[in-house]
Image (cartoon, helix red, strand yellow):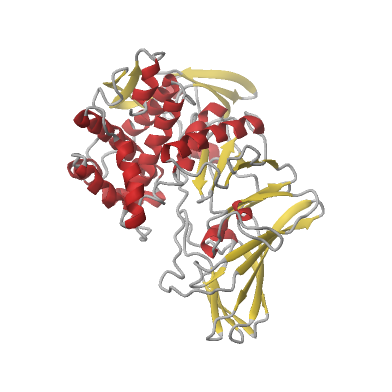
Length: 579
């Protein structure tokens, strides 16, 4: 699970990730007869109009089978809303139960086939400002969907075996981690259950590019759309990132895995990318202006979710309480996304510092920086700033605790030591991931409780010690003007990039920006950096001109910045990366 990462324009969080299977959680029933899922494109001429799903399964011995969707994923509670024309062959009656559920009457053990259509959650190409992973995308030339919104299932059968087939259609490509499961004419690459079907991703279309696992890694890369980089470049970077993280965890370097890339449309004031982990796959949404070197962090973050938290312990099943634990599952994942990339040389020390500084500036200017943990969790699903907070807090705490472990052990152990031990412990001693971490940290002499109370529970601002990243870098703390673009970026994007909410008291107005001007491009400036000039290309009464100003708001804020020295020395990448 990750959030959308923006490099020009405001960051809008898109929360993605863990599957919560609610309908069958109370029953351990096992149905030995596999469920068979089939997916096919519904064509209108030579364009894709919808996706057609069929599910073959046996009726319950009671004669009534309840069937429906997950009750929630990634902030969406109506995952069934894109389904149409639900029918069941072999049933004597089908009763609508509401909220995406049906009661199916049939003879005990009868063979049933449910069919329905999935329509698009968008009537346009997804944009940065409105892209949401739970909503299926079905466009004339391509489609993309997460299994949670795509597939219904009989209640209490998450652990039942499942198989899958795609109905080939000339001119329409397809890729999915569902292809790792068995099909009618395909051997399984791994065992599959209904839960695996739900935690899947599908992508396809006329322009789909698929890079097969010809290197022995088991990794496939599939993409539609066009970007600021070639599909070949994304394929190469993906394989490097996956190899680094499999080495870190000493994992199977031949396991089947799929990475998908789908396009989102940026605007002159809003750009970004996002991703979601799917067990044996992860899915990326990337806008057409994001350069390749900005995606390494996203790739590293999403692939790290293969282990964190899935193999490190459990997370709360309470959707409202779960965000209180995201400092571990998301914040630690953010920390390692940067640390592993700089250790391996995929990003340079300068890039590493730039990524940390972008996050530190965003944290410094966050309107919820001091929000207590329970309050932040309660507003998490409705506030972009609150959604970023556990990522920021968790990454900063991981860096601080890593430095303390190195100092206390004189370099013999660090955060790596604890997480690798935690993966081993979680196999035999199940428990909450955060609890297992606390216990193992305590054994290494690191008591994280006081920091959790101060920074997570009470919301005190976190300041990194100057030596957090080792001898070749210093964290500098200073006051600077607060950051403001001088206009309402969300309202501006929603109005078709006509400037809205220009503040007459700020530098943007003094430089000439006015409500109603068409913003054509953001040319210069960094997010959350009030010291770097901001330059916009605008259309004013039919003429184009540049407006240049310092993006400063009212008041001052305390900002930390990572400054790297001796970046070319071989040891620098290691110490920056927490070794």
